[in-house]
Picture 1 (spheres, rainbow, N blue to C red):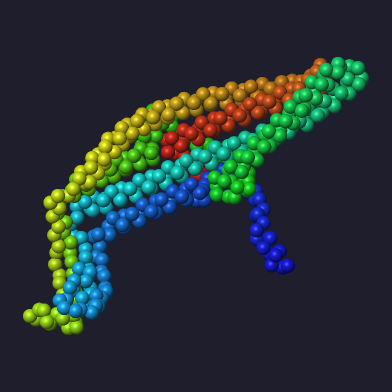
Picture 2 (cartoon, rainbow, N blue to C red; picture 1 turned 180 degrees about the vertical axis):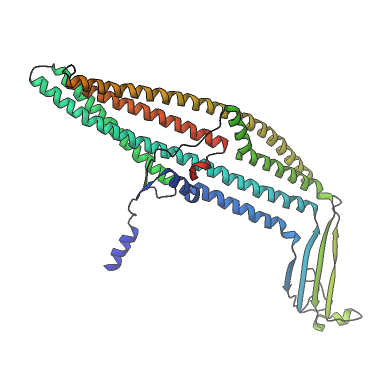
Length: 427
C-alpha cells in the first residue's frame, strides 16, 4: 500500500507555479533558460566540434595492433602489411589543400552559428518583452474594468431606486443593466487573455506549460533611448544586423567550399611512420635472403590526383551557384532592413503622437470630473453625471494605456531591428 501511494504521488502532475517577475528579471531569465536559446547553443557547440573534425587529418593518428597469423607457404599481406607479432603505425597529413579549405570553412561556419545564437537571443528578448507588455496591459485593463463594474453597480442601484420612485423610465434601468453586463463580459475576456498571456510568457522563459508568470511593471522598464532620426536608425540596423552577418559568413563559407573542390587535383603529402615485430614462424627466413625481427619505416607519402573525377568540379559549380544566390540574398536583405527600419521609425513617431493625444484627452476627462464634483456641491450637477464622468474617465484611462502599450511595442520592434534590444536586459 505504501509503494502504491508513492507511485501515485510520483505520477501526479506537478502543481502549477505562479512567478512574479519584473521586466529585467524576465529578460535575464530568457537569455539563460529559454528553450529556443538553449537549442541554438547546442547547434553552436556542434559547429565548434565540426572544426575538430575538419582538423583531424592534420593531427597524427597512431594505431597499435598485431597481425598474428599462421603462415603456410609464402608470408602474404595482412591489413596492408606482413603478418607480425606487433604493429605500430602513425599517419599525419602535411599538405592537403582541399582539407585546409574545409578546415577554414568549418571555422567560418562556427562564426555563423554564433550569429544564429545571437539572432535567437534577440528574437527571444523581443518576444519576451512583448509578452510582458501584453500581460501588463491585460492586468492593468482588468483592474480598470473592475473599477468600472463597481461604478456601474452603483449606477444601476441608483437608477433602480429612482425608477421605483417614478423619477426615471424603466428603459434607463435596462440600459444600466446592459452596460453592467457588458463590463462584466469585458472583464471575463480580459481575465482569459491575462491567463493565456501569462502561460505563454512562462513557456518562453523555460517554465512548465501549467505555470504562469505575472508581469510586475515598474513603470520605467521600457525607457530605452532610440535613434534620433530614421537615417541613424537605418545605419544602426545595418551595422548590427545579425542576419546580414550570418549571410556574409555563409557567403564566405561557400567560397571556401568552392576553393576546396577546385583544388582537388593538387598533390597531397602525408607523413607516415610504422614499426613491425616479425617472427620466423611466418616463414620470412625461408622466402627472403635475410630475416630481421625489428623493422621500422619513416617517410613521406605523395599522392597526385591525375584524374580527380567529375564530382569535385560539379561540387565547385554548386558552391559557386550558392555564392551567387547568397550575394543576391544579402542585397535583398539590406534593402528589406532599410525599408523595415524606416517604417518602424515612422510608426514609432505616429504612436508617440497618439499617446500624447490620449494623455491630453485623459486630462480633459479628469478636469470634467472635477468640474462636476464642484457643481454637485453647488447643486448644479447630479450624482448620475458624476458617475457617468467617472466611467468616461476610466475609458480614457484605457485609451491612454492602450496608446502607451502600442508605443512601447513599436519601440521594442525598433530596438530589435537596430540591435539595441540587449540594453533592455540591463536597464
